[in-house]
Length: 64
Figure 1 (cartoon, rainbow, N blue to C red):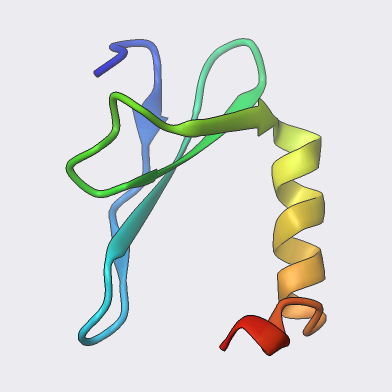
Figure 2 (cartoon, rainbow, N blue to C red; figure 1 turned 120 degrees about the horizontal axis):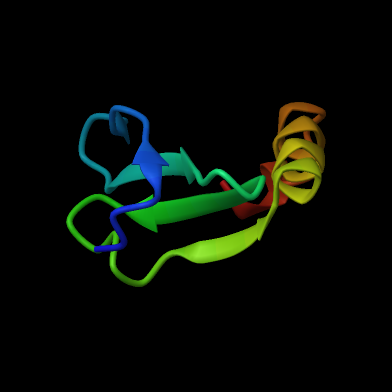
């Protein structure tokens, strides 16, 4: 696991995988399955913010 990423506490739903969000000092954002932080999805902080806002707006509801 990269030591320069600051990970938030895991977000878990009952009966599903737990996810963690992290950031580094360069402004990059990370999403990882808890326990697999060594292989995160990474992008800019702005891209992560846009993704979260789109999910909150319901644009991923069809995946549920």
